Image (cartoon, rainbow, N blue to C red; front, side, top):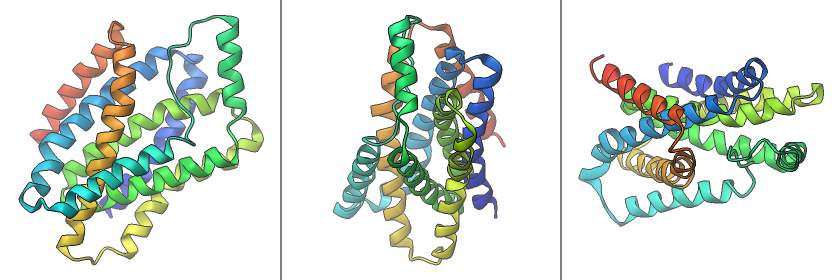
Length: 238
């Protein structure tokens, strides 16, 4: 039940991003902080939780599933809207940014849906074996969803509310799928964890790190680092 609850929470971060967009008037510092915070949390999760879980069972197939997880997210990102925030406050860039949001169509929504279903299937299976690791992954996924919600909120119309609802419950859908197939052999669990590791490696190195480096001189990047470290320390003692 706890694992299913975490999959619901990840979807709620979309709504948090939309809410922050409305009250902060698209303040990019909120995005910068959430990205750096997510980066620290996921690095900790990879090094201190998932790798120790699978290191005793490393085989050719575990490496294969790590690569599959990485490649799948790469394929998904061809359709997911990019959420970089390096645009300056110039008319051309603002127009470009708005045009980008206006072209979020059916393919993008479906890609985001599939992206979150798959991520939360992995989250569910990780939480079953290690709740603290699952909680950290939940935070990592959720904080990564805030900038997407932030951008979606910039173009939210009445006709888009159904799409937002579907995205919000997409994590829960992934959890339900994993719940239906939870009685699986330990070897399959290792492969799922390896698959999860591949996705997290891609998310951390090829998405979050890039944005962290683009905003490395911004003080909110360091605020995110500090909050992330404090949160990890607290969780280690719970």
